Length: 455
Image (tube, rainbow, N blue to C red; front, side, top):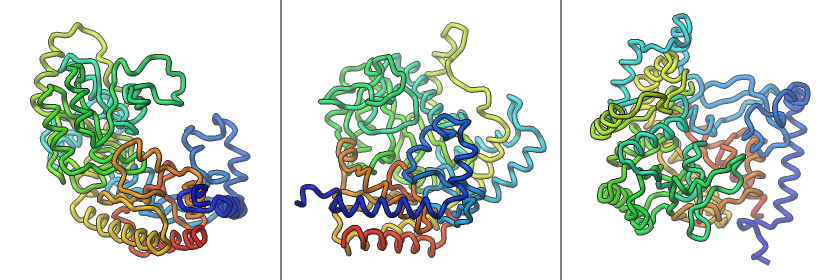
């Protein structure tokens, strides 16, 4: 009988619970339903971005406004926001310094393909916050990772990138690969992909240094691209010595190490890299770095910059394949400067860390009280409950721990109780604007839900 349970829950009980919560949501969000029915038809599948269909509710709520760590939808519901734009608004919605910077820059122009004084100040702050890299600006972390890989291949003269099974570094083709029976293959489900991506990529399991060494020893890997913690799956922490070993192996075999901090910027000031003393050759961060305005940054050490400059001077004239017209625009720099200097501070992270510790402890207590076979993981301000025992060691284990039916029911039920978490997994963020009572409301809602599912 227990073998038929889903994450420890009776499937009939789960189905009944999910059906009731979906009906409750639909009955309470009639204004959003009517507005979507009337106005969404211009969009493919009725959504302006295809992944919005991944939200599990019967229909999307329409947001009327957002401030701090709260959303208000057009049905009048106030929602404690722990999704925070899947990290894009990790420092809260519309931080005042950023909103002020937007207003001021809007009067001076939005884009003109030339730098500003704010750009120069922002460059100094990037070094202050993240370390001594030679910086470039992009619009998304996807672009930043794409450009970083081009530089890595140019500098090393090698074709491949090594990534970890289950990773996510944006929508660049190079990293849309996975392990299948020990071989690197295109990820299942890719739209319109006709090329064999294994020609430019190799996949290993996270925390498997022996596998990494075997791949690097072939001599065709330009760079290892990794998050310090796997986050866009059920969260996987690095084992003791993994990052030191990874750094040693990349140096031994002549590959560059690229750290993507787009999610792990939640760790603390300067991201996981600075908090834990990592020494990458290249560094990428996006999402929240400009307070929610689309911006990403990527940088390289002086040694990599020198190698790239030598390559760049010798290459034939023509397009580099890097850069987009609206990247490094003055609005980005205004928001980047405001965020780095006034929003992304030690005090902000101290508040976030305390709130996330409170949340993780509360969720742990609830899971223990109901004897659920689940666990909680936290990295700084980022917390995730995982509907399986842990800890998880790699991407294969993370994929097996994912429970879509349980998670969909939980997400809708939490929203019915005034709490929003990320739709793609069970990720929650605590912002500088998140109040202890909001954390406590989420814990209470979680307890109420598990009380029924595990009764």
